Amino acid sequence: GEDVEQSLFLSVREGDSSVINCTYTDSSSTYLYWYKQEPGAGLQLLTYIFSNMDMKQDQRLTVLLNKKDKHLSLRIADTQTGDSAIYFCAETEYNFNKFYFGSGTKLNVKP
Amino acid sequence: EPEVTQTPSHQVTQMGQEVILRCVPISNHLYFYWYRQILGQKVEFLVSFYNNEISEKSEIFDDQFSVERPDGSNFTLKIRSTKLEDSAMYFCASSEQTGPEAFFGQGTRLTVV
Image 1: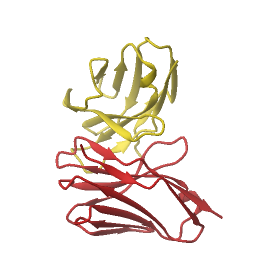
Image 2: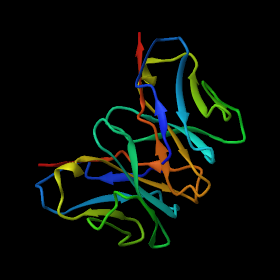
Image 3: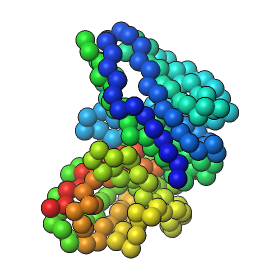
Image 4: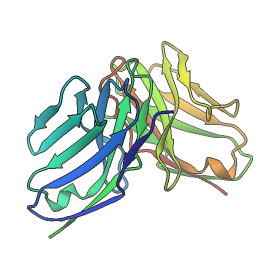
C-alpha cells in the first residue's frame, strides 16, 4: 500500500524558519496535505497542494513538492511558540476516498 | 467557523462491550469518514460513507464495525464486542464533495480495559 514517511521530531528557536519534510511512495497521488494537531485537539487542515504544482504559499506557510523525488516539505517562516504541534503529511488518490497519513512530526519551538 | 464535532471526547469501556462513537459533520457536507490512530502509530483509514452507504472500507473495518447516519446530522461508528486492540483515537471527518478538503473532528479517545 501507499507509504508516507516523516521524521518524528524537529526543534527550532522562535523566529527561525522550520522545514518539515515528507516522502511518499504513491506516484498516482493527486493531492498532498499538511495537517496540524495541537495537544488535545483534532487534525486541522493547514494547506494542500495539487500534484501538478510545485509550490504553494499561504502567509507564513510554503509548501514545496518535488514530484520526481516524491518529496513534500512544509516551511514555516518566523516560527512562533504557538506553532508547536504535531504536523501530519497526507496524500490521497484521484477519488479522495481515503487519506494516507505519515506518522507526524512533532515541532518544538523554543523561546 | 463550521467544524466537525465528536462525542464523547474520551470513552472507557470493558472488553466485550459495544460502543458507539458519535460525530456531527459540517452541515452541508456529503462525504463522511472514520479514521483511527493507535498510540504511537499512523492515522489509519477505516471507512468512507456517501449517500447512505459505504463507499470504501479498509481491511481493519471488519464485521465488528458498522457505520450509520441515523438522522440528518449525526454519523456514528459502532464497535461491537470491543477488544483491547481497539483502544485508539478515533477521528471523524467530512467533506463537501469528494476532495480536496476534508475536515476532521477533535477525536474520541477510546480505551478498552
